[in-house]
Length: 263
Ligand code: G3P
Ligand code: CA
Image 1 (cartoon, rainbow, N blue to C red):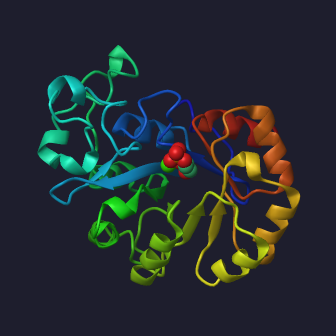
Image 2: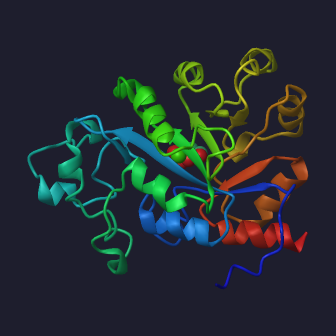
Image 3: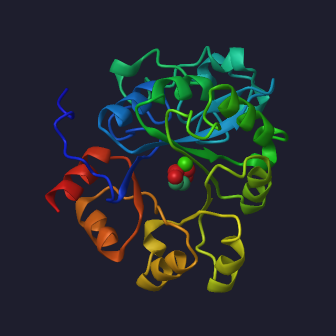
């Protein structure tokens, strides 16, 4: 395909496709995940939440209105919380047509479907969205990952990082799956906090607007990495690479790959 002639990027900044290649396909859907892998992103980022019947689905907002036709299909179910709908109900929704007519009929994927799509093609950056709303979500995620072989060292077909804005949740997740690199979104924390967090956390992933030379130096001094979000223009990508970040989360993985390859 058109992306297969790319050079080896081993040792360079990691390319993370945000909500899939979400500049080109509806965020957090299989076409976006597939395109991110096709563009040769190192990782695809998704947001995971739980349905009322305990199933794991891929959705950014805690309500379904912005990216699906839920308000038309279930007019009396406001405010359309993800956690108030069953998987079967969510699977009736159209999560593509808001983005473009050519995506009409694209559904909300399950975590399982994303794992199947990525297998052997790209790593997974799994964000657990608002875990305080979903008791048991850590255990459910670990069960899915384990069932698909993503937790068995050496056997898993892709690399994996789990991250959240909820740092207490991440500490809990880390006790369940200590072999999975743990990322902390937001902040960044103070240097004193970073010293403590580095006992179990592997990444500090703030907004790119918060990245300074001192921050990058401190993260690295404590043996962690940083993958800032969400960077969509080439100039800013170049600046962050010069600052020494370890990965960049972007809606345009193709643009980031071009920046890396132009050196
Ligand atoms: O992966 C980082 C980024 O996704 C965090 O922000 O709101 O896009 O989930 P958000
Ligand atoms: Ca996210």
